[in-house]
Structure formats: C-alpha cells, structure tokens
Image (cartoon, rainbow, N blue to C red; front, side, top):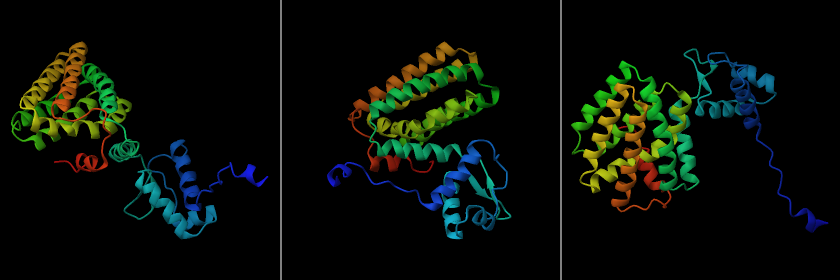
Length: 256
C-alpha cells in the first residue's frame, strides 16, 4: 500500500498571500473592479480576508509588480491596468527560461511583423507617420553607430505596431520583439551592408504606409525579416541556439 501511494506527488497548498492576491486579481480581471476603483485599505483587506497585515502586504506587492494595483498619492490602493512594458518584459524572460531558439523567434516575428505592416498601412495616421519619419531621419544619421541604430530599429517596429491601432497585435508582438530586434546591433557590427539595407527597408515601409498599400507593406516587411535571418547567420550565429540568459540581459537593457 505504501509503495502504491509513492506514485503521487505531494499536494502543494498555496500561501495565504497568494490566495489573497488571486482573489483580488479575479475581481480586476473579471471587470467587477474597474481601473481606478478603490481596492481598500490594508486594514480593511485584513478584516475581509481574515489574515494578518504582513500577508496582505505581500499580496499587494505581488499585484503591484504585475501592474494590477497601484498606490495613489493618498497611499490608498487602486485597481489599474497592467502596463504593456511590464507584461512584455515578463513574458520575454519566460521565453528565455524556456530556452526558445532564435529560429522560433524569427518564425514568430515573421508572422506578427507582416501582420503589423499590413494593418499599419490600413490604419496609420499623419501623426504616427511623422514619428516614423523622425525615426528614419535619426536612423539615417546613425548608420555608423550600431548600438544607436539597434535602438532605433526596435523603436521603428514599436511605432509600426502602434500604427495598427490594434492593441492585441501590439501587445502580442512585443515580447518576442524585445529579444529579436536588438540583435540588430550584432548584425550591423559584423555585416557591412546590414545598416544600409535596414534603413532602406524602413524607407520602403514608410512609403507603403503613406500610400495605404498593405500588399507593398507586407512585401517589404517579409524582405526585411528575411534580411535579418541572412544577416544573423552571416554574423556567425546559429538560428537553433537558445536565447542565452546572459545575452538576453544585454538586449533587455534600458533604452539607449
């Protein structure tokens, strides 16, 4: 009988603070508690959940890290929307921990970036095109500065995603983008024509957005992503290697 029972894993009981955090998160994610609504004071939460203050404080810390709860100027707790940047960086780190490969990143980016280019061509307004033009001007001036050009490339694709006016697509592409596009610096340093081809592709993409030509935008994005793959391999990197944690720390550095 003892041997038979050994096949089962021990049941893990969630910590009290996690149960409190989960309960508050369900209220926010269900819409029953809207952004800006009061979550309650620490004392009130202690009374409602029947736990001590340290448990509530740990639960609030978890919720603040996820962007679901914020403290107002009055020190009270309020529900809030998760920040794109916070969600994206956490998912990016999860991808690293799962040892995803550059080939997987490339295949995913190809699908999402082409979709973003098509929708951007259909929805871009004058304001976002002006931002893309400003980015392009800075990129043309940074052809000899790989680190700066890498940052501008990442920013260009973020702006392009914003131009779609599709927040689901914008958020979906960001985690892989945080890992994928900063490799531009590696490519530009090792492939002489890399910087010029990148800037030329961006020029064609902006022109396609101005013309509202989704097919042309998709074509140039496809070429742009194909160029990345060729450049990555010419730079001596293997598409099937995992995104190393040490390398990922460098590409997830703060903006230039």
